[in-house]
Length: 264
Image (cartoon, rainbow, N blue to C red; front, side):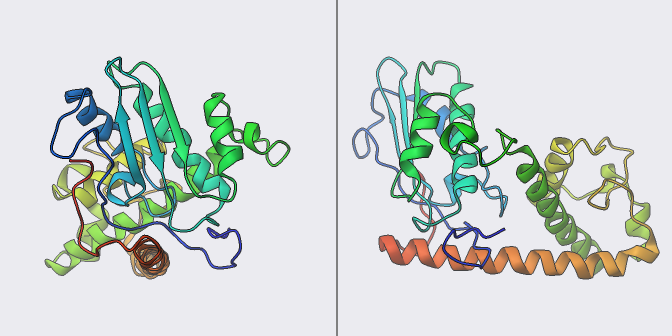
């Protein structure tokens, strides 16, 4: 599936942070702590392909909080041609995440400068799914099949990073496949892998196998080399796509390369 609707390449959306328009520079504004909670909720919304938060991808360009708890969020993507299904997923997930924040009253999510932005924004405003924006395109109104596909790819990529780290510290193939979740290192990469497993209904209790195939089956020592080789290919594709879209976003909006804090 192409991420850029006008291209056969599978472009992704991994870029760094950008400031978000605030009520006043350096001032807390009427939202106060609510604004912090809303930005925190937006940080739980992940790009479906690269599995990175939209708040660390420079996709959140505006987050306004009214005195009565109304929230208006504006999102942008690296190019106006990013695939509509990816764009809709991020908009819908942002809407859901912000609604769950205590103190929020109404939520408006706007996708800016996208070739299907009008359709997506109208559907989000009417609280509809993907078919509300694009009738007849799919029977999967919430795009769950697409979401699951990319969660499994993200799981492969993140698990392989953790596995390579352990192998680099002297673990053998037998050690790796015999390891349990309780033995995983306390790193963001390992924690995210476990979050993905939970979302995919793959056991992640302390006694569960630390490393699993995309279908959730524990790996064997004989499978490990082939699994790592395939995982590196997945990872390379994701990282290359991320670099492409990072550069596109920076160039298009004349953004600095270094990460910046969101909406402070």
